[in-house]
Length: 175
Image 1 (cartoon, rainbow, N blue to C red):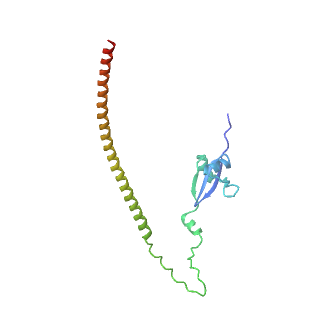
Image 2 (spheres, rainbow, N blue to C red; image 1 turned 90 degrees about the vertical axis):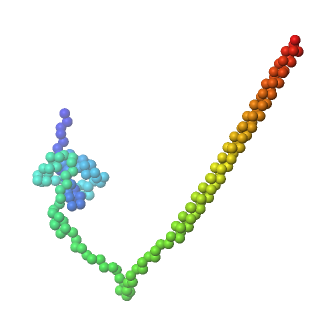
Image 3 (spheres, helix red, strand yellow; image 1 turned 120 degrees about the horizontal axis):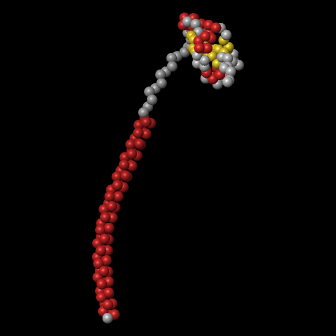
């Protein structure tokens, strides 16, 4: 049976919090934090041995425990003072307020929309003309097929009559 590995507690700062994790190695801690970089080599992560800080992470191994670093007031006090920025000015020139940009023109958009509408109309008319030609061709085809069928029926009947005449004459000839 494998001997259980001893857990250590590691800490790294994340924003206004510290992230603690109980893990068997630095590599496992980095994986728990989701880091692709070696935060330990950069000095951004460390081993924690204070029993007050290690109790909760050791109770939840592998789980990242976040703790607020200081109170909100302490964090606000630690921020650098807010400096109002003054615009940079040349010593010998006065700055004029920037002119507002002119309203953009729709002319190019209007021309493009007109070209689109004209092309759509042109294509719709061409397709309508083709549809009419197709209908005319279907009508002509039906008429041609009807005429063909009538003529072929008439000619087949004539062939049948001539075949009968031929057979009868052949029988008469044979005797």
